[in-house]
Image (tube, rainbow, N blue to C red; front, side, top):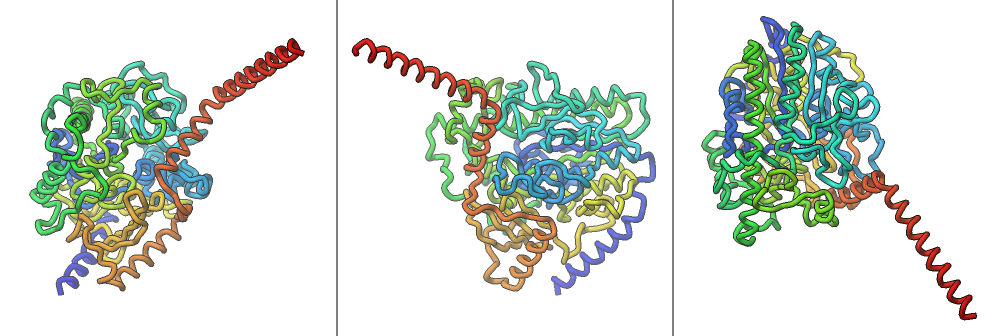
Length: 590
């Protein structure tokens, strides 16, 4: 009976949503739009979601807007950004994964070109065609070839980084895959300052663009994509010092703390089981006191980087308030995926690369210029609480991220409707009073959130409607309260599992054997999703870490082939000289 009531309620809610879609989303002047993307923030990282970092400006948006409790993205940055900006599944945009992990078998295949493919239209292009000014600052990572930059996809002005990450203090690469930090402004390589801090620079440039166009009357879209908190974690010391001692108890204690806080805030059912730490991770008590100090300080930098980012978000909001624009601005705050687990130090050649590039990992300047900071898989697992695992994987720790929407026409509320990253673009278009053309080459797959934002609906999708996600073999399909999921090594085993994530958000009780019909139905639904969106199977034996290493070596050869060529020439010249010397010696003896 209860199940029937839930189904009827969902159907009624979807009917209200459908009816509300025809109603105008905005009765006054068309709203300005600010989209803020945090890089690698876990579900409970922000203050409003129970994190230790002080994020008062984001928290204020959550208080006066809609705070989502069941919002999902992809487990990797570029696919998430492609979907957010287009409303289209990542495989249909051309950005199914990131270039760093792409196997050679997939290169150049439809959906795997690592660029927005023909027929894919961004929300910026649609808004600009509808009379909006459009600006972007921060991380792009959707291509920098001919026709691939923001200026080619609807943005009037932009200063963007087309890489998975970079140093936050200067224009410097953060991993061997990149030769430098590829920043672009308005379609050309940017002349970057020798010294800056990324969060400050990203907001400064956005304010500069808005101020330059101060006399214009059109509404605007501001896409602000921070590097916080992607590795290398770096923050001004005055922020890092605020968290002295907060993380000294280690990752097990932090995960328990985050779990309890999520229960107190109502994000997790009181009787739900907690997901254990992934197997083969170290216990806090098993590492040395020196390592404990280094990792605790790394988490301080992580929190300081979040607070610093929030500080600069506050500057942007204050600027809009000073011009009387903030009240008619829709703010969207989200993360592209769950927390970053990478520890690159054991990878072959990485410490040598750090030394060559002047990076250190010393306690006394951790997070400052030329320091290389990461939190590793153990603290990433803690910051992913209440979910299991983290970035790269389609567990809740990789996909379940914060979403806050505030502004005109948004009712202050906790939104428990399950939503997906593709839903952002159609929502913004509806709020701007713009229709989506039904005959587009690559139509949107997302749904407008207008109904749940206005309070007219409780659901985004009906009980029999689902959505899928796949990145580099890690896959999931959501429908109602259930989730089908498969993850590959290193932290997965390639097996499909079925969970009721409403009751079991930690994914601890596999229902595949107990619910064979539901399992089969979910498998069929995922297969339909994969076929419809052109998902390619992973090559046998694919390992993401090995692929990153191979791709980095190939990139290094591409960047520095001339060094190798000179070395070969020098070696041949040396061998020729040795040969000539030996011949001369033999001639003298004879």
